[in-house]
Image (cartoon, rainbow, N blue to C red):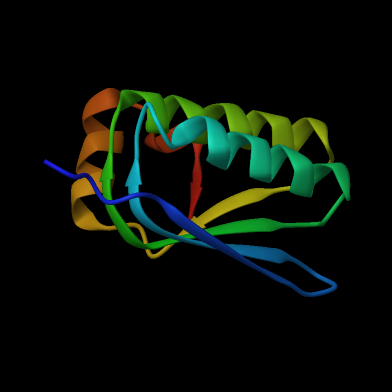
Length: 105
């Protein structure tokens, strides 16, 4: 069965970088997301917003990546914010206890 790839698009403004995600964040796509956001943080944006509205699935690897990226953002004097987080992902974050580790709007 073919799994939907994660597609990523980036929109920059002076105050923030918005990363629109759609598809699945999993073992195969998490490293790409991590690399992209790490590169974005190198430019020192005040905020990096991950728009999760198109995300259909996120496994433990994806969750771990989000938490690590949130910490990296803090170290870079930036802020990682998740927006349009779906109910399924909020439930998973609650179950895993990771919700407090992430900034969700």
